[in-house]
Length: 335
Ligand code: NAI
Ligand code: MG
Image: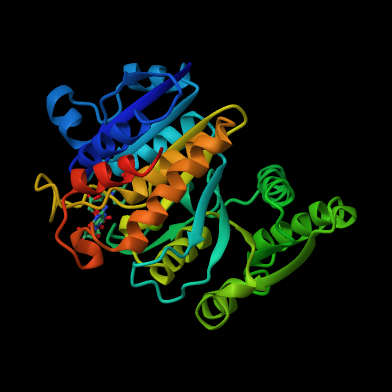
């Protein structure tokens, strides 16, 4: 039995969560769900976007499923990542059939540092003598400890998943101190995995942005700092058919939170139009994290079947099926 914290959140977060819990029912695994409130609606009701009760539920669970928040997303998901020290953000770039993917042969993982870099939110205004704002600054923090932890995670991931190469991405030619340190640590960690047959290479982030378009098949695992990882992973999402398909995992020492990359999609919320696959594949990542490999493969295969059949297709992929029709179709193909 696993205790799972469930935070549906706002907009389509609630719809894709319902669709996902429906599918988990088809497994021979017992889940005990603890529901937590968070997001815009929660803020309107209680004055808090992320109540302490919800944080406690997540802290006491074996894993957490998170749907999406709306305008309060930064106060919810960024804070949860910090509170739980979820230092690794995993974003797979994997082609599925029937999805308008630009490439049909991609399967690599982007490992993004999740706790520091540009997203510590340390910004200041620059003011002139009369107090007029004339500019602003943002501080970017890269530490040896966090760099080592994320690079080590990426190489461990490669080893566990039989990947042969890890690519470190940075801008050390310009950001000499911060990314100079990241690059140095990357190669120190890489040394420990040479004997395991895992290669390492590094590229500048701008070159990587191009290689993702010109030869994305050459990547196996990419490891990078927070902001670069955020941008490159959205580029990755664009390569394989868009936000309705891309799951993610946030991993800490003994914790995992799993969420689609997309937001609350107010433009389609409440209409049953959302593609639940991103959330469903997030649950697949959760099952892998919990060690339930067989169940993860079962759901992944069922998703693959439904997408390649092309009969039940949501609007983002050019069809007109509903969120729950997609969920039922996948559920029916699990066993
Ligand atoms: P979004 O991901 O919600 O939507 C972008 C576009 O993709 C929209 O046209 C939407 O309809 C479409 N889309 C997204 N997911 C889809 C799905 N599963 N099926 C079909 N179409 C889908 O991003 P946007 O519009 O920038 O932000 C909307 C709200 O979501 C904002 O309030 C934002 O703060 C929040 N947000 C929350 C995130 C989180 O909770 N982790 C992440 C990103 C945005
Ligand atoms: Mg992003």
